Image (cartoon, rainbow, N blue to C red; front, top):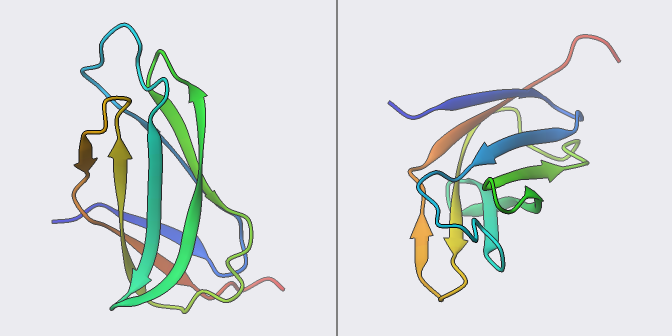
Length: 102
């Protein structure tokens, strides 16, 4: 079963991740890309920010989720290492719900 992250529509989406099993350079000079999709439709390109390269810590964010559909969507993360190796995570789910407080 896939991991599911819940968010309220219109809130800032932010998750922190850590890459394990790294060498002394960590994720220095890596590229991190993540997209949110509903079916084949692109909902958002998440912004990846490296927080601590040596420890492998990064954050994925989207500041505006107001246009996200209220449904369960799919995402994954694609890492491109400093040497050019491409590694993708398993898919995970993002459930966007309507908020109560406006």
